[in-house]
Image 1 (cartoon, one colour):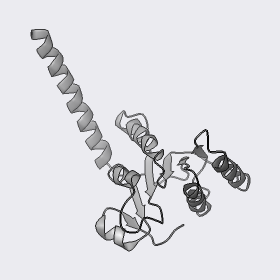
Image 2: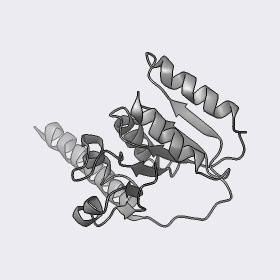
Image 3: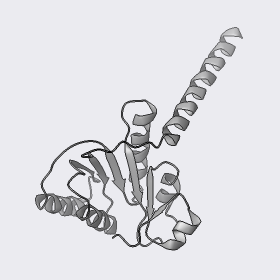
Image 4: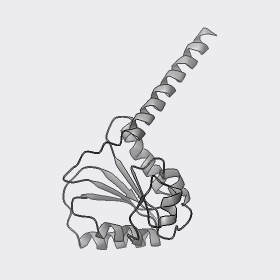
Amino acid sequence: MASVLILAAAGAAVAALLALRLWVVLHSRVLVPRQSLSLLVVAGSGGHTTEILRLLENLSNAYSPRHYIIADTDEMSAHKINSFELNRADRDPSTMVLCNGPGTCVPICISALLLGILGIKKVIIVYVESICRVEHLSLSGKILFHLSDYFIVQWPALKEKYPKSVYLGRIV
C-alpha cells in the first residue's frame, strides 16, 4: 500500500513539473532577433502546397535553410518543392516551423513544442490559416491557435473572433 502511494505521489510530481514547464514555454514569448532562421515547412497535398510555396516566395533569405516534411505518397508536392528550391539558393540557420493547415502539421508542431518543453531548443511556430477559411478555423487551426507563437489569419472576421491572431490581409 505504501509503495502505491509513493508511486502515485511521484507520478503526480512529474505531471506537475511537466505542466509547469508547458506553462513556462507557452507564456515565455520573448523572441530574440536573429540574422537567420532555419525553417521547417509542413507541406500538405494540393492547394496547401501551392499556398505554402506562395508564402515562401515572399520570405526573405533570412529564413533558411528550409526543411520540408512531405507525405511519402505526395509526389506532386515533392516535385513542386524541388522546382521551387531549384529556383532559390539555400543560406543560414536557426529554427522555425511554418505551416498552413494540413492535418499532418499538428504532430510536427507538437513535436516542436516538446523540444521547448524539454529545454532542447526553442522552435518558433508560425501557423497561417488557409485563405479559404473565412469565418471559422480549420481543425488544425483550432488546435494550433493555442500552441503557435504567431497565428496568422487572412480575413478580418477571423481576427475579430480570435484576437490573439495576426491579420495581415490576403497574403497568399
